[in-house]
Length: 389
Image (cartoon, rainbow, N blue to C red; front, side, top):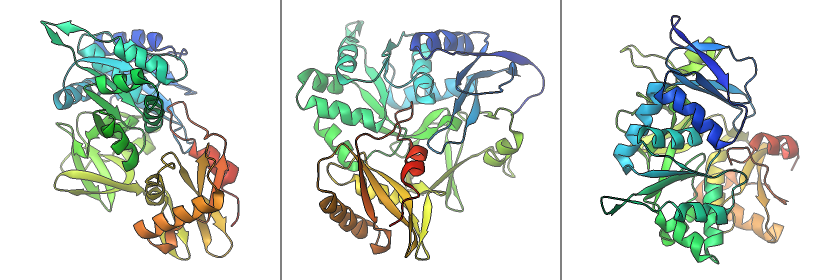
């Protein structure tokens, strides 16, 4: 992390109540501090370099904790760049306030001088719809545009509810833009959203980039992309300062090139064509099956393109013949397991090749989720990853 001079106090917000987080962020971003510690970080210092606004600790889907320090200027730059891309208006917080997506919803509201609408407790479509429809307001005779951020699982729940509840359907149509991030958005889910009249923007980014910094494949103003050895790298004013208490990791993940430009190594594979970024999957989420490298992210994308399997998760398993294979974990489905596996194998073979075909379908009652709403892949690998085909 940069800086060895002036410091600011770091105070933990133990509550997950979004009102408490909003109150702390108001001082950290718009005032003189203290900086805000969010998440279950242990051993954090009492002080951090001046200019730090928030330290977010998250284990993510890999189970490896990290405490990311984000500066006030990075958060504000991200908020202004978002407004420049999609417009200004009122924001509804529907994701956890202790994760970067929630922090950015609150920061966007703060820098635009508006109080955000807040949802607390477990996510449910009916309270979401009530909050969304209750945001209607006007300035100088014109309606104030509204915005929100969701993860794909939330969007799916809303679309499912909208089939029978016209208020949920109306709420989805009410937003000027709904940012979708946290994980890949299946094509079938995006098409359902568009058919329902929801205006979606796919976002790509991470805590280390102050949240989403690439919208629909196009970087926000000031953000630059590079592909180095197949890995997506990001530079620009939204980059975090680094990892608290871990200078070696900070130097590895945030290298500075010969021109003095600081980059963030995402760990994602990708390519840029005509200025549009396409993510091909995590570079470390690859198995070797029969001597062939197989990206499980690509397998999962193909599986999620099958109707009814939009939320499926693909995990590695042992394979007595090929060394490694994959399994598809499916929640809450009454479909025949053998028939589902056949559909999966046909779709994956067509999209990637026969070698990538999953060996099993594992039905479970419900997917374990992180607080962010993402699938808890570490828990699934621990539970099923040692299974042999």
